[in-house]
Every structure is written in C-alpha cells, then in structure tokens.
Image (tube, rainbow, N blue to C red):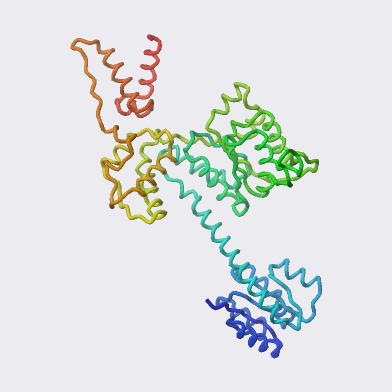
Length: 449
C-alpha cells in the first residue's frame, strides 16, 4: 500500500525537490503551496503523513497541526522550518507533531522519520480501535438478561458509571462480577484510562502487598529491581480487586490508608506517591458476616460499600438461560469458526433444569465446549455433558395407601428440593406454592427432626 505524504510548503523549490525525493523513495507525494490548500486537501482526502512548513501565509503549520490533531488522528505530522528554535520545536511536539526538522532537509533522515511516524501512527490508530472495541464489548448492552434484578443492575449502572464512588460487587463465583466492573469503568469518565485487576484469592500476603503497592529494589529477597504496584499502574483509571474478603488484616489496614489518603509508599520505600484511582471491589463471601466475625475491618467495609451491587446466581434467573445460551452460541461460533445454528428443544430444556453451580461462567464454557465438539448444525440432547443428561429422567415416589397427607407432602417437598439442588425458588415454582409457604414447611420439618 502506497504511503501518501502531503507536503505543505510555500517555497516552490523546496516543495518540488521534496516531491521528487519522496517519489524516488516510493511515497505518493501530494503537494500544497500554502496552508489554505493544505486545509482543503485534508478535508477532502486521506493522507498518511503531513510534512509542513511552520511559517507560511495566513494559515501556518501550527494551524494545520491543530486541525489534524482534532480531525485526522490517523495522520502523522512532521514540521519543517528554516528558522528552527528550541521553543518552536517544543511547541510543535506539545501540539502533537511526531518530529521537527530544520532546513535544508536531509532526505535520508526525512525518509527514516516518515517510516517511524507511519508505524507509530498505525499503533496509535490500532490502540484507539482496540479501546473502542473494549468500550463496545463492555457497554451496558453487552450484559444479557431480562430477569428483574439484572434489569435493575443495568439501570443502576447508568448512574454509577459517571460517578467516582467506590463500588463493591457481591455474588457467587462465576456470576460475572468482572463484567460488571468493566462495564462501570467503560461507562465512566475514566474510560480512556487503565482498567487494572487483581485477584486477591490467588496470591500470598507478601505478594499481594507488593502487587498492590509496588516495591523498591532490595526490599526483600527476590526484589532485584524497583516495581510499580497495581495502584500506580491504575493511576487515573480504575482498580478492580476481586475476592477482597481474602485480604489479611495487615493488608486491609494499608488498603484503607491508601483509599483515604490517595497516596502510598512502595514496600521498602519512604517516598510518598500520590495516586488517583477509583476502586471497584468484589467478593463471593458475605463481607458483612466476615465483618461481624472479626475477619474484615468495619471501617474498610463501609469505605468499600459506598455503592453495592448484588448479582443473583444463574439458578435464580432461569428465564435468562435461553438468552445467554443464544448469546454464547453466537460468540463461540465466531471464535471457533463453526456454523452451529441452534440447540434442540430437548437439550435446551435440560439446560433450563440444570442448577449451574458455576453460574454464567460454567454455562459459557459448556456452550464453547459443545460448539468445539459439534459436527452438525444443531446441538442435540445426546451432545450434552453427562452432568446434564440425567435431568430429564423423572423420579417416581410411591406411598402406602392410607399414609398421612402431611407425610406425603413432606416427602414430595424434600424430594423436589433435592432434585433442584436446593434452589428454593425453583422448588416453590415446581410445587406451585408460595416461597413463604415453602420456608414455613421447611422450618416445621426442622423443628420436628
């Protein structure tokens, strides 16, 4: 692909000689004798690089640079001048110029600068494209669900995102806490800044301290160089701490101090480092119970839970399973290049009955596995994993004629509850009774045992 270079130069000899040299080096030169013509070309055509004189008539090179910075982010700018000074060079670089060259122009140097500028600008464009994809991927529209609690979460996220408030996300493992955290970040004013995450359950206490706050060279055995922590890396953006309930008391104290003061010291260091970080934490543990048991600091608990989001487990939002299956099926087909059209009614029925202890994550991995192993256009009941296959078999219960109705009711309730893996909401729906009635019956059975 030809690289188009717009040369904006009011000196005829310089402009023509640059055009000849650029053409010989394999570029496609586009010429403008003044800034006004340069403006017209930029508005009507796409160029990869602009090589512009600084001093021209009514429209200077800096005027062009300002326009390009705001309207042509994919275009690199190289400024040239016969009156090179350090202040003007600094001004050009601050305004977004890739480089600044003085006349007479060294053609070999210009060629190298153009090549580097094109590579650099392509990386900038690619980075911008990837950021946009992330925003789209973690937009509120990416969260699938019609269950009332999920709809409430979506409504809350529209208000939570733009705020700077700390957020704590509660829910079982696999419910999508990180997805919610990313949605908050990418719908906030910090969306163009880093989103950094750390799983507090996967690391020992000493490692977590270093990961969070960084360390100085020689701070401990193995600290052979200085290292920034996650707080520093997330400066200006968002830090997501998963499984915060696993933090030790000592780390809880240091975390609270950083949240209150927005400053830290690296392990083994004495320098105070200012940070500006929005914290989103998550836990599969009940932090209130952890606090009441003395395992989690009360002051940190209330510092983290300015805003609380509770994600329901998948077994409580059965109506969303069909939507999620379709969503993950489409994603998996794109990811693995498969053409699985749908899932049979019987297979879907079994998926709706399964309690999904691993929640949405388990469902997603199940669909991916089915797509990878599929040989046809439709996933059938026989394709499902073994843990789903037995759900279609009805369990029969027999009673001796004359058995008390209360005993029959008890057996049916307990058997139904066992069949749905303890899901009281689903058990009540299956039995056709209210949830309060079910709880009352279970309390009666417990008091009699």
